[in-house]
Length: 404
Image (cartoon, rainbow, N blue to C red; front, top):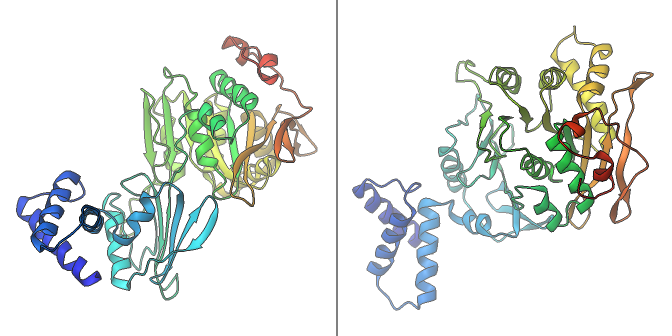
């Protein structure tokens, strides 16, 4: 079956090469060539069997072969390959071992196809790679000897394509009253950090928050690989770049944040803060540029603690005495997202940062917090510094969950 598929796939590739067709750019031509090859093979096939053979051929030639059905399955949120015979998929947060069986050459061929769109490389001198697939999925690959005997592949899909907070309310991830408040906070120009664990929904919430930015504002995004896919009328997306074989030409997240300030941003978005770029982000926010960012943390308050430490990686001359008060005056809100044992993602916590530091610790006020299965209004409040009023918003009405 596999040999027959490979022979037919080779025939389709020959046909496409003769036509001068790029199989990754002209899906209709690929399908037409696949139908011709299946029909040429003859045999009595039912319409369902013929369609299945055509689909397999198209996946092999223009897609990702045996992995393509998993990527096409809307219930699958992540696929990972530990070895050619151990391919896993996650559905609704629950991992399962699939029936997909690959070979070592197939794995290497699939990775080469995945990297075609990004133009990034993978070799012994650079055994890790982060990239974006043609469909927007995020790819991470590690090769031996770093990964041991087999290539390790992770493909993370974005199941929840939320473009605004209302989409997350409909999905049950964000309570309606919290969404009303956060939408107003974005319009008012507050700087918001989204915290959470891996696969908790940080990027999903960040994208939804970005969708609330008024269309008249210029937005600059800085990411390791393109994931946000903003559709503002005035936005520029920047991504990092690894160095070449000589170790030159690398573009880091710090470089992107610094360069973005020369591009007249009215809102700066950093996809994920995990290193010394935290200092450049704080300096940008402290200069009056509203921003959004994500950070890995177990709670909203832990996120503040982590953001107090990450800037210290920028150099010995950066001290906590400078970072802590700068952070307190730069970040306005921290939203924490969580994923429970059943795989459900939800916003569990929102804290406000009033800008005060006591005993080296940043003060925080809990606006919403976890209460069993729900997110409940906390006892904290938000000091209106004039930004809500300037945007024509009533902060008290927003905190009450009503329309301003």
